[in-house]
Amino acid sequence: MPVKPVIKIGNPILNQISEPVSFIDDKLKQGLIQDMLDTMAAENGAGIAAPQIGVNQRIIIFGIGKNPRYPDAEPVPTTILINPVVTPLGDEKKDGWEGCLSVPGYRGLVERYTSVRYTGLNENGIRIDRVVSDFHAIVVQHEVDHLDGILYPQRIKDMSQFGLIEELEAAGRVPKINKVEA
Image 1 (cartoon, rainbow, N blue to C red):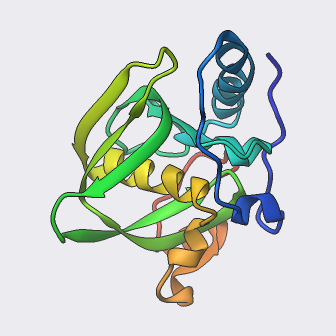
Image 2: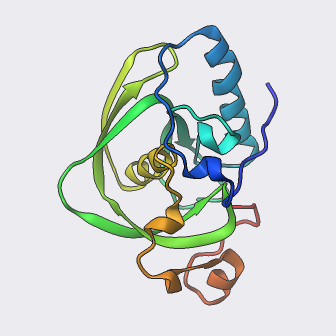
Image 3: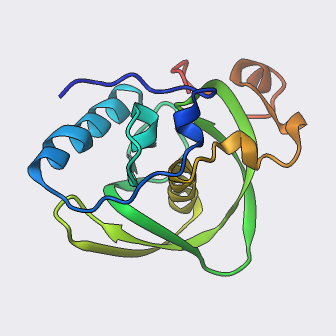
């Protein structure tokens, strides 16, 4: 399937609450889900949500092995998650620098829960129920935010902690990454 253009900040679809998926069929698996996988891979993303390619459905995909955008991140298994629900486990939160395919070229310091439980269905309708922490937990929270019409800059508490990647790198505020669009 083709790589889709990623919708960027400012497009109103990114601010909408996505609709639940009512059934999973081959059209969904071989169409939208494959398009999301192809687009995420082409963009070196750690995750992608259906609204980012213009589809108002509650589907996210995430996973990371070696990735030039996140050279220090621990591996996260590639996961297709339909109608996800995320529940924080405890009150502990941590600040971390985030980027987004829909907010290219920027990073911002965002506070996220350090440990969460997520549930949903995979592409075969099988229930997924995982408890995760650290980078894995951050990625899931970031992607589910997309389904609720929230982009990470809306979660930044101090806008002085938001900026162009090259400026943040030059100031030593974020580690240098390979020059791949964020």
